Length: 546
Image 1 (cartoon, rainbow, N blue to C red):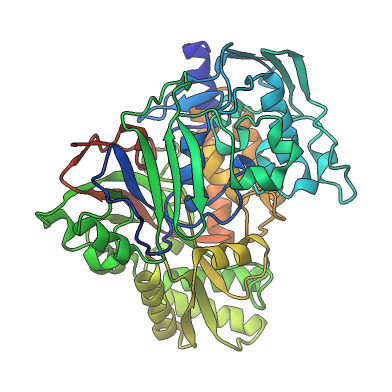
Image 2: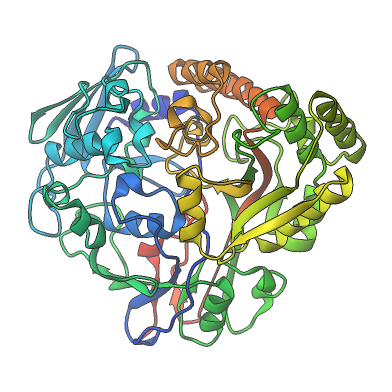
């Protein structure tokens, strides 16, 4: 791939972003001790879905899929793009036509070759709504996508814009300009799949065949996911260890206790109870670096009093202005989070502290009460306000703090709603069954502002087809995103992204709270701890003394 060309595409798509951050999972003890070999034991949570890359949108599965699969491109620590399975990706016709050339010699862990069909068949499967893959919206700009979203679509129907020219060539025609397309190409949704994935999807999801730096060994549900180094991997992320053991926990406190006891090698989920002490704990190596993950909470528009209308907007703004983000960050996050000023993170070129309407993210109790009263004049409030979260993660303290602020400022009943596991929580979020507000957040899948905004708030990502779990739909916002993806320069694209954010600040489909640092801890035997462009751990770099 031509470096200069890719740089311009990233610029037009808009900039550097961050990766999937974690929610917690199940405290168990594995048979092998953490120090037995150069197999690194790491904190994990039970994946919400079988291990199909196109249906993986949360941390438990995301960490695993990242290690097992290799896509067209990879991202470096600064968000730069590097060819992986792709030999080149070239565009023409104002970023509406792409030709992808693949490197030869790549193969899956079952010995079958990675070809153009491996990618195209996987993309068609993910994009087809009959297959109910959560990342379908990643393909929304490819010709034929809308036809695959029809209720009666044939499960074998394909994207008309995709053509396999030969084993090493893919022709891609888009329905609109999409300068971020080459950047998306390294995300989960775009990973290749072998033929066996389509012959028996149920079996494959439990025992995936892949082409990445690691080879799958086993998945003992609610206990562990094990993988070993893939000797046939040809890419940029060659493992320095012999394998990974994702130990599944129901509590980050349990994982941290195992780490301190030498029964776990590494965690990138520091429990609230350890945030004040983990950096001074002499028994560990601690890490706290700037990151790009965002913490938010979503108030779905199907809740009474919270529709996409004047009343709903007033109530969201009032709730947002009820929250003292700075105080919560100081008392709960202890220097590992920064109050949000927009919907992006600081490394993104479109990030701005000067957006029109960002006062809704500032603590202002008197204004909050005024806005709540205006909403009551439209329709009197009744009931209680709740925020749901998964109790096996780290959200409890900050969710309870927010509920206290809302209760005290607006003089309404407000409470936190714990759900026992991340699996239960995410199943309700993904299926649109939440009956309250719920904790949310993002660590994007690829280095473009497109992933923060389009994949979370565009209409194409709603209705179970992407990350827009609250089903927010605003044609004015969608139009701004289209303009950003068609822009010829970073500067022009950023203007459209910022105008789109100003619309979001009025509607607040999710309420921005904080940007999180990359935090982690390991035993003293572990070395090579590093973070990717979004603050996620680089598992392939980990190694330990024998």
